[in-house]
Image (cartoon, rainbow, N blue to C red; front, side, top):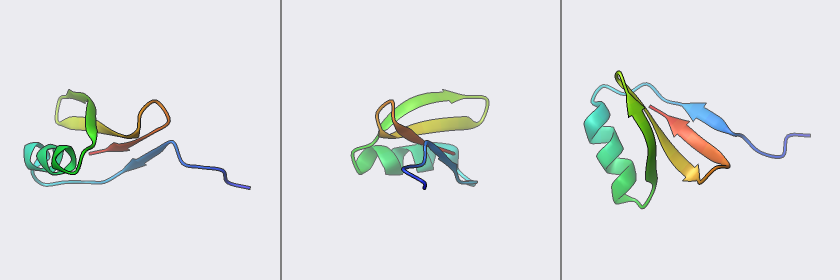
Amino acid sequence: MIEGIYEAQLPVKELGRSIQFYQNIGLELAWEENGTAFIWIKKHKSWLGL
């Protein structure tokens, strides 16, 4: 039985704009480097890769 998902990834065209979108809805940037970013969905429990 699946109890949760730790990571999901979405391709995006404009990384900076996408980061800003998720920050505007209250999510925190966990990490950004070399055209990749991770946004915490639930801190230290699940994140979204962009």
